[in-house]
Length: 304
Image 1 (tube, helix red, strand yellow):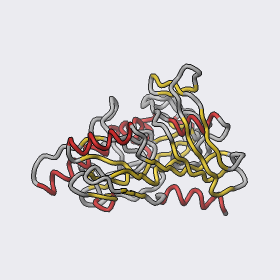
Image 2: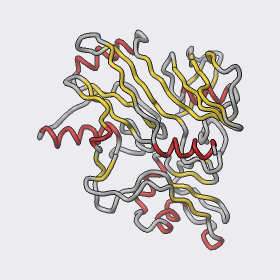
Image 3: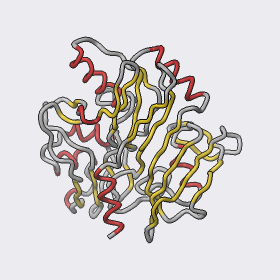
Image 4: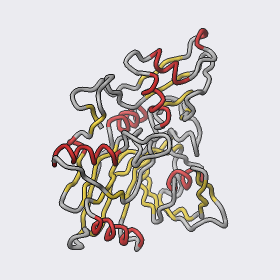
């Protein structure tokens, strides 16, 4: 998502807490150390999962800082007074039934308790409203975690939403992700079958949970990490992240289910491909998203 006119660069903003800043709230420290960032915007970024302390994502705005801690803020920032808007370049597919966008990391898919505005759904509806000159209502079809980037699909009509949801239920929609994981999974390909229990914004392995299955394939190895292609066969909350953590190879940058990863700019998980029968005629529709720059740049540093 970009501003309506111009935006400041996507940088990661990194700083080390000074001795005199010890005991200061995270949101206040961000606003003071990043001049163009208001305290209100700092709170939004924290709630969106765009801020980490010592490699661990922090969602608590009032978290008190200690001297020597490293704070990283990675989401694109907007000038004060400037509204967030959908960049048309992020539209991956559009027809009379569906619209698919390339969601950036740090942007919630749908409104949440912590964030009502600036979600992918709201920004896409607003962009269509401005283009069409009338109110537009979209139907969410699936979701991506706030920290996950990639293909996100909405329906333009109730009939299209019903047809796509039926295909999701019948497992006729194929989703593909790319993740950078800690270590190298062995064997290099396989299927993780582990029942999961969802609750309180967290998912845990559970013998009494719902069946969950994720296929994986290592596509590139490094000394301490690997690029892995994943295909979730079921759609549980945080499924890929929990499954990878369960086999000892958490997604790099996943402070919730993995471990703090120094200098990782983000959760290294990207929704790269979505294939489904088109709701109008049943023909195969494939929507793809290339790995974003912050993802590829970090992978390149590991290669070198």
